[in-house]
Length: 169
Image (cartoon, rainbow, N blue to C red; front, top):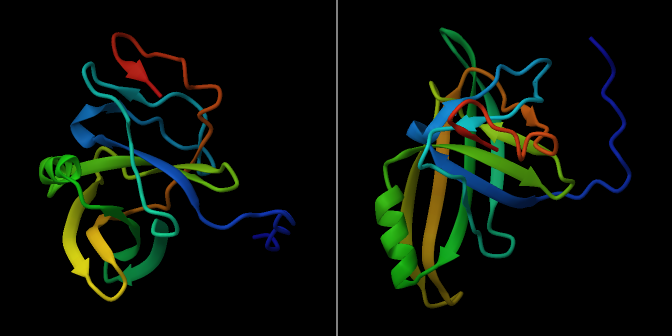
């Protein structure tokens, strides 16, 4: 056990971006060592990471520690809002109820892999129109129960690597 480390003075809160991939598109996620993945995540042929979008200040990522009779677990959730469009509706219909693994990057550039092949996150969304605040679009959510917190991912050295016939990120 150690003291809490001092945070960097210029730490910026918030989520910069996220990518998602269908769980069936993930070939292998390396086992984290000390909560960090330093080798490439490989994906199956024909699958790629897709860039997510959230309206300004609408995207949040959280990992809540919970207790059950079986022991501790983590409730992971990424939620956001995206404006309505025909193209967005078509995409969300395809995604609704499907399971995904996320690559989340915060505003300090810290990257995490959220979900595993065995414990992916489920996607759901709700449509809303609010006259008062002028909102028209979709609140979406990726959420899941994980046995461990999401590990840090060092993708800088892994972006162009590949594993056998599968692609990597």
